[in-house]
Amino acid sequence: MKIHLDLDCFFASCERVLDSSLCGKPIAVGGRGDTKIFQKEFCSRRLYDKNRGAFVPNLFYSDVGEKKQDFDTFFIDKDEDRVRVRGIITTASYEGRAYGVKTGMTIWEALRLCPCLLVLPPNHLLYHEFSHKIFEFLKLKIPLVEQYSVDEFFGDLSGWVRDDDLFSYCQELKQEILDKFGLPISIGIASSKWAAKLVTNSAKPFGVREVKPSRWEEFIKDIPIQKFPGIAKGYERRLKSRGIYKLGEIKSAKSLFYSWKKPGISLYKRVLGIDNEPIATNHPRKSVGISRTFDPLKERCEIKRRVTILARNLFYTVSKLGLNPTTFFLKIRYEDYLKAKQRVTIDRLFNENFFKFLILDIFDKIDLYKDFKIRYIGISVSNFMEYKKRSFDILKYEQDLKFKKLGDCIKTLRDKHGIDIVKNGCEI
Ligand SMILES: [Mg+2]
Image (cartoon, rainbow, N blue to C red; front, side):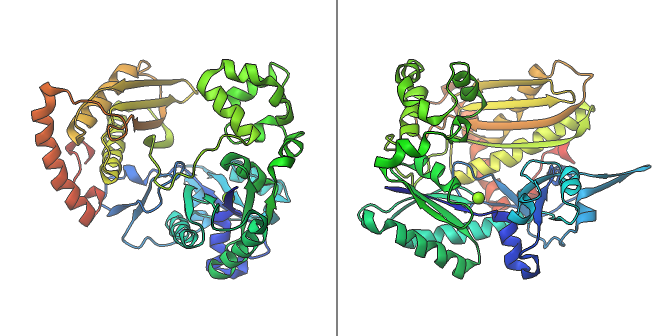
């Protein structure tokens, strides 16, 4: 049996550990596009890379103790003659959810639903540190444990705890985490990782729920398909167009899923709880990315400066992970939801110089609407050489090797003094 652990309203719970007067009240943590990365003034930023999971975002933080921001300075924009509340809800406490406040809602909307809602600016470094401590603790309690996201973990207790004792073991674990860290957690127990993740939803808040394999079909019978981890908009549409609305209806559609080849077969097995996917203690990263949303901007010179900055930060992240990507992806979004993207695969020794010019080159190619304002840039890299044997482009190898060596020296400097200690000329 596998378990899935999910911290309850994690960001809000962390804030309550720091300030107990927030307990029992409708509170929420909000967020807004972090564009500090683009500022020209020097600020010593570092990468927090202790948490490594499939869905753990890269965290850049300033190490010169930033002063804590309050609601007005973080969420309120005053330009010329108007005052605007910006940002969205990232996590709401259960007291806030009772008013209808949800993740992803604008703060403005949330405050309309719940005028007494206390919205706090985020403190991601705190959340990442808590997450890391909990992961270290779980490693002592569970022989195989995987960090999945900043507030979710998978575990396998086979051979450590008897199946009959799993439920009480998890209940004790849940209590221990609350006592030790002050954070409530919920745990789902089932035959596979994804089944356990689905079960956790019905264990929340602060609960443990186990669904034995013999009861699985009955458990999923009436659950809407979109509740299953991995059934996103695409699959939802495809399944609904064939009259499949509930998880219980999937078993009899085996041939349909099998006609979708590997992804379909894997999803079919996941839903039935028979996928047997192992806990990935050493998570092979499939891709690493960085993106920013900002107020729409037309100035191409500034956009390119921003592309360069994101490329530099992503380069540093990837080199910290010790990976050599060979597929590079850039996506931009224009003001009116028009978008452009391109993916390029090149087998080269990864270095900052090559990477920067490649991304800028892709940008020039895909930016066809030069009169339109841009509001989003996202860069990601994948197809790592470490996991798939490939050979380097021999013609560029000598030159790349030189840049790689230079890059190693710059990395040492950045490790010591922050990522911004070495910038590109065009960024200043
Ligand atoms: Mg959670």
